[in-house]
Length: 450
View 1 (tube, rainbow, N blue to C red):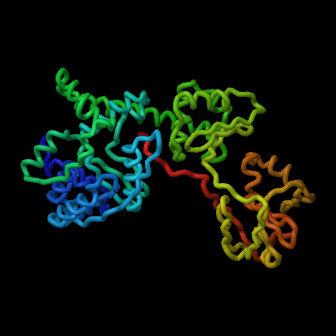
View 2 (spheres, rainbow, N blue to C red):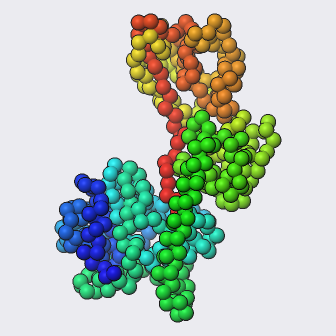
């Protein structure tokens, strides 16, 4: 199929009505061709598309590229937004990968709900991605390469040129007399992708001329396999999910085959926005948490968080901010209260439930567990120790010292998020307050599985 505006028209006709489109525009060959195509596609969404240029500041030519992008966009009447990012080098980490992460974070920041961000990735890019992932020993999710579309923040990222190759894109640019930015770093074979592009794939193509198309097709097969694995994992998750989205029942996990167990844990971690650990680390996690001693409380750490087991549940614990457990916070309970390292307390009015408003006006304060606390939960006849209550509620040990305790005139009035204590509770027609803790750092954003 020849690359043309007519060939892309069905892509835009299938988009939701009213979708706001933006193009990730580097000014290079691929994104310049896509910008020109958008200006020619007979569809309102394509014609109204804006452009976003990410200025990394890595190349000495970065400012000049911004100027050229502005000229292109002015010529084609495309609104341009320039986003500046800083890429901080990290020893042992590819600068190429760091720049990519910074670029996607920037693009995500301007992608609102229902918006669509277009990128100009094509079939040759897909082939390079497949080969890179294979050389890294990736599994099915990695070998599936770049999906045609995926979530990006509150919106969607789409790659409308994946069915076309670099030769077709170059021919289109020459036919229409287009000019583009040439990034000199694209010729540096120090970067893995450039090495494959300039050294490896041309050599393979001398024997297998259709190698790029073949690898792209292999990636599509792997994408189908990834979809099947995701469906299996979703079904297993229904059986194995714990009391919260951040937990799995260990006894249910243990009934699965080892392959399905690994597949489910990876899927679950992706859902929570955590990058699954490598093969060896994952095997160690399953050995200690699923097959370990029942009374053990293993802790497995990696870059994106921790996995802990308590009783029959495996918990994902994202990195938590430090907090001052000895600090006392004075609080006017009519207003929200920020607790650094913990989250924010919010209140809403109620009738006959929650904290008694008339008893909550004086000397209210928030403290944290130090030991020996006693509470008479609403509706119970006797006081109980906080230690026994948190055990009965099944609260994991690592969260117990992070439970805000509301004191009124130095008496425990509420274990926030769990119970209100007598005699500070509202009943009947008495006005009350429901107090809610919105925890910080306890939920990550979903991320792309490649």
